[in-house]
Image (cartoon, rainbow, N blue to C red; front, side, top):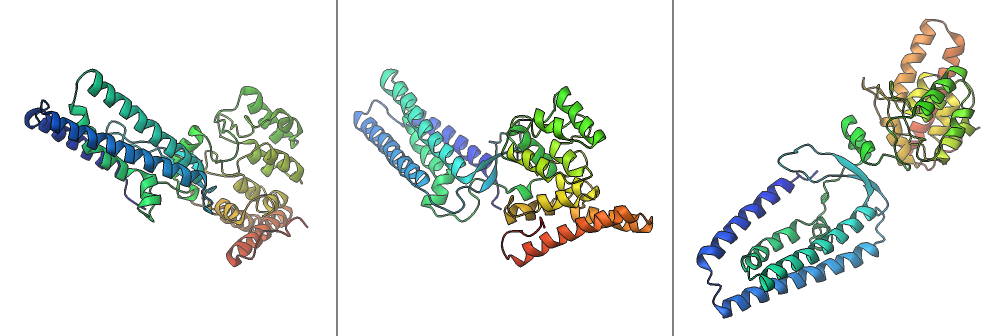
Length: 353
C-alpha cells in the first residue's frame, strides 16, 4: 500500500508558499507592467489548463465502465498535524471519484475567483505568483490525475478494503456511515433494545422484525452491542424467513458486537445450521462477501468456523448429543461454503436443501 503523503505534500506546498511570498515581496518589481502581464498570463493559462484537465477527468469518471466502479472501499479523512489519527468512510470507487472531481472543479473555480478579486480589485499581486507555484503541485498530488493521467497502479486514494480494517477503524466507519447497505444505528432506542431482549428470551423475533425499518435494522443494544441480525441468527429453530426479512430491510452482516462476533459467529456458536446456511448462501451474498464474512475473527482471533469446532469438541466431551448434532450441521455448512470458495466454482448454492 502506498505511503500516506498528504501531510508531506501539505508541508511542501507550505514551504513553497513561504518562498514564493518572500521572493514576490523582495525580488519582484510589480510596477513593471511587462512582468505583471507575463505573471498574469502564466497564472490564468495554468488555471485554464487545470480546468480543461478537470473537465476531462469528469468525463472519464462519468463514463467509466471500469469493473471496480461499484467496488466498496474505505477512504481516509483528510489528516492534519493537530489530528494525526486516520478515520475511514465507506464509499465506492465510482461515488468517491465523482465527489473528487466535483471538489476539484469547485475548488479551482473558487480559487480563481478569490485570486482575481485580490489582484484585479484590491491590487494584491503576490497571490498570482503564489498560486502559479503551488497549483502544479496540487494538480500532481490529485488522486484522479495520478490514476487517469499518470496511470499510477497504486492505491491513489489511500483506500482500504473492508477485510483490511482494524476493529477500531470498522467502528469509526460505522459511525461515519456504516459497512452495509443501510445506515448504521450505533445505539438502539429503549424500545428496540427491549424488543431484542424479548426476542432472545422468548425465541420469537416476529415483534422485533415488525418494529424495524431501514434506519433501525442495524441498531445495536447499549450493553453487549448485539444487532437484530445477531439475535435472530442465534435463535433455536428455522428462522430463515425472519433472516430474509432483516436482509430486505438492509441488515449488515459485518457488524460486530463487543466480543467481535458477527451474526455468523452467533449462528455458529448457538448451533443454528439453518442460519449459517442462509448467511453463507451465494444467492444472497457474492462469494467475495461470504469469504470476507467467514474470515472475520473475533476479539480472541477466532473465526466462526473455529468457534463451531471448539463448541463441538466441548459438546462431545460433555456427551451432549443434541448440541453436538446441531454443531455438526453448522460445521458441515461452513466447510461446504469454504470448499466452494476455495474451488472458485461459482455461487454457494445447494445449501437450502
